[in-house]
Length: 501
RNA sequence: GGGCGUGUAGCUCAGUCCGGUAGAGCAGCGGCCUUUUAAGCCGUUGGUCGCAGGUUCGAAUCCUGCCACGCUCACCA
Image (cartoon, rainbow, N blue to C red):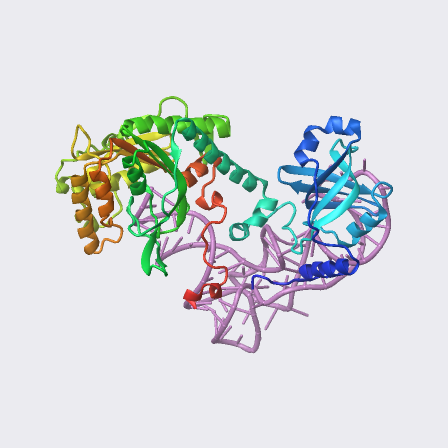
């Protein structure tokens, strides 16, 4: 039962009906504050001197009540301020209503002069106190607060009321995105919106969510990536585009995966992946400076340093550096297998089925990623595993692609886009065959995308940055659920989800 | 999906090993109190012990199944 009624709640509902019987509106329509809490604190000296009457509103967080006086703090959108009521200054009627009907958690408005208490705290002496909204549910305990992760995620509204750092994290999330937008807008990028519901999905290897359009009687997929639409836009002549929006992937949930997550997707005509690399480094340094005010910060147990030029390594170099193993893309599978098998945890049978490229990537993912603490650009991914990327001008086995790792997190993925329609068509056909063989995350054939490429996609480089992970990194949060306001959870009660009954 | 852990009052937690009438603090309620800030003092209400079965004279405690959450492994970004 979500709407359980305990004694406290019933009692407060009773207060509401008693107030109504007395002609007091427990939910009045508006209040006109003259100041935010912070403005009063920032301008305290002048306000005290001028005896100006201020009005503030907010939620009562804790009450210290005496017989004929009381102190309490209210919290508004920007902070907290102490309110004082006392006989002689506050009308008897307002004090009586406070005494009888107002509880911690209620939202109130006050009007009065600013003064400083004996202990020096800037406080508003209420000459008027009105209830603006009655809270019937009690706030969590005042100094342990709300700890239970499940309740914090399910009832984020409570989490935000009582946990200041949670509030700060989500403000920082917005600042990070704002800073990113501002940077990109200033560089001449055009922010675009592309379909979330797609008849053909693509741009990544992932299982989609499937939905249905009734009027058109057609299957639609929630997008797993906007990539193919962005490149259509570059074909159309938008040379610098980006989008910061949600992707949906029907896959596992973990501390770094939520079924819906936010990506920056960005394309620049006439660039290759090296140009994008420089942009990424500059962009992230800019955000860190602007939002954190520093290029060095802590993530979990590590000190992350954004200053200086970030390390660039090819995958093969990274493997050699962090495992001592020397490999080449053109080595026979059996040879690579012999070297990789002893160091990765996988059955011989599983490994036998992997290609050279897949074995090398497996080694990288299981042994190297976990060692990439400081910002590291890992360059040159196998072409066979990068079906939308262009082959390297120097080595046809690898694609012009990099991923950026910071604090073991994969933050960015970028490449020089494959713009040869014929080559892309062949890759799609190969992927389509894999789908027929039951590979669920292989690409769907997208003939319209090929048609777009046939009109000519200029040399272009594209980028994806996982915003949630970037926010985790910059706010030092170890779970993606700490940076998504309403993360996906199972239904609170099994009967809430008809599928499971 | 596998492994480990957690679930007791509105909140934060004891109690479970070793079965014997369910506890504390905060919040609430009733008092006293006109400068408190974890206000104080006196008194007091509040519980399907996650759910369902089982063992037992007796289960929060032992057993089985299920549910949710956390961590972790696998998959993925």
